[in-house]
Every structure is written in structure tokens, then in C-alpha cells.
Image 1 (cartoon, rainbow, N blue to C red):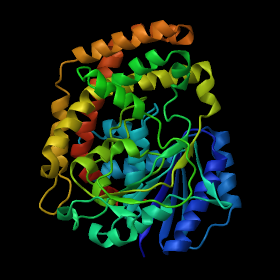
Image 2: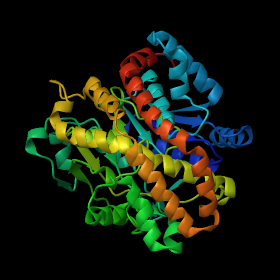
Image 3: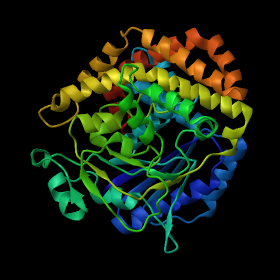
Image 4: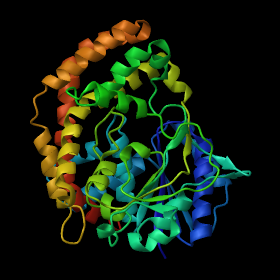
Length: 431
């Protein structure tokens, strides 16, 4: 029987989301006859974890659904077993990269990848704690329905079951390795307040994730598309497209990946950096691997914590580190786009060593562009004033550390790619 992993990493109370993703797991098992490993990677506080456990205990799952609810103690024990079995030369560093003390969007998903390998799964289907499903005719609109219909099939076989195909015929024998949609509702990044305060500053801030030497026209286009997802149009019926999937059209709250990708290359383990978990979407696109874009968009909303002063500071720090990470990631994305099919081996599988080389090369870039990014961001926030102005004091205090961390994050990512095959192999049967 085909096994899949439907996962929810969380560090906050989200009992309603836990219940909803359980219903999605039931749907997958009933409609596709698959074994679903419902994996809740729970880094929330004890009270929230207890609420999640209560929900999972109270709900009866469909046949074929197996629940794994793991706190950080259990996750750490699993990782120690895997790292020890892998023979890694820097076990403590790897453990820190896989389960850091800070928030890491890439690391929590990497843990799901290793658990999926341990459980013998063919694919990982990821959701977020600050997400809800759309509803049509009284029923939730589950993305997994489209994901399982296409993921893992040869593109030529999946083509008859989609709304349209825009895939080059030369790639028809390649496997569909990604299926995803976007979101509707609030911006995926908590910067709507900036837009309301000053649209010009909003443009200047958002454009910081582009290379600084981009022409203004390209920056305007990027700002217009950034963080908006699929807008606010409700789901009225399925529309699916088979072909190269633009990373700007999908969101990590609504994504699935086949093992041929995530067992070969992990995500960047950067801490306190939004957007660090999108790397594989670019890799799949640039390597010319087929994907499915669907319109079963998830509803995004903001948790109350983001509105507090401490939540504001934490989120703006993560946004700042995102901008700084783009010096390196933009360079890697450009080189992956140039490489194209050269990123694949003779079996049409991703070449991890080549990806690691591109990542490591990026760490040698001059940091002058990031110095300029911090100057521009500081100027923007001073223009806004208020708590944005006060945040610039923190930027000044942490300036050197932020620059160092952005570079070190990429060095750590290269190391993790190089060790990833051994970790994946060691995880099999370790759950």
C-alpha cells in the first residue's frame, strides 16, 4: 500500500487546525486507499501540546490513518538515533541544524522529511498552524485530493486527469514531484500595516528581496506579486495545471513533494528567517521537473501573537533575515536556472553535490549588498516611525551579528546537503 505523510509542524496552540488536518488525513485514506501517517511535530508549550493531544485522542480516524504526535523530546531522540547511525563527523552541529532552539521553517520541514523516510512514505504533504481550509457546499476543500491524484505519476500519465498541460513534451517521462496551491486571505507576510501607513515605504521594503541592481520596473512587478497568494477569490471548482510550477504561485502551507526530491536535498535550516523553506520549489522548477499547480487554496490568517510587541519584534527580525538571505539565495537561484537539466543525473534525479556546490559558492559573495540592504531598511522604518522606528535601534545593535548569521546559514545549508543522503538512509526504519 502506498504510504504518505501529512504533516503539521507547530510551535503554538492550534487545536482547530489539528482537528482539520485530521479530517484531511481521513479524506486521503478513504478516497485514495493510501496509508496516511498524520505527523504532528509539536514544539508548542505543554498546555498547548495537551490540547492537541486531547483533540487527537477524541477523534476517531479513518482506517489507514496512523497518528504520530511528537514533542521535541521525542523528536530529539529520533534525530540522535539517525545522526548516530549516519556516521556524521559533526553530530552535535547536525542535531542543532535539525532541531535548533530558535524558529526554523526549514528545519521543522526537514524533520518531517526524515520521519517520512523512516515511515516508508512516498511523499510529504505540509500544512501550517495558521491556516484553514476553504469550504464549498458545506464541505472542506482539501488540497490533498489534488496532490495524491498527481504526485509520483509520470507526467504523461497524469496529463489526462488535469485541466491543462503546459509541459514540454520532452519532459513527459519525468515524474510529477511537486503538487501545490497557494492561499487566500491575509498577506503571507505580516507587512499589511506598512502598506496602510505608507504605500511608498511598502514598495521600498518589499523590493529589498530583489537584487539591488534590478531595474525599477522589475522591482515594481515583484512588489505587486509578493506575499499576496491567490487573492480572495473563493473556490468554485477545480482548475489544475501540469507543467513547471512557478514558486511565486505556491505557498508552503499548501505543498506536497515526492521523495525523489526531499530525500536528495533538504531545505535551508536557517533560524528566524521567513521564506527559508522555499528552496526546493526553485530547485524543482529550475531542474525542469514536472509539477501540478492546483487552486484548492488554503485560508491564511494571522495569529494574535503577531500583534503583540514581542511578536512584532520577532517577526520583523525574521523579515530582516529573509532580506539578508536573498543575497545568497538569489545568486543560487540564478545559477540553478542557468544549469537547468544539468542539475539532474542520467536517471533524471537531482544531483545533490551540484546543488551543494552552488550553495557553498554563494557564501563567498561580497557582503556589501547586504550592508546596503540594512541601510535601506533602516531608512524605511525610520520614515514610518513608531514601533518600526524603535525596531531600527535593534537593527543597529545586531547589525554585525545579522550579517554574520546570514552567511553562516548558507554555510550550514551546504554542510547539511552534503550529509543529507547519509541522514536519509540512516532514518529508514528508525521511527
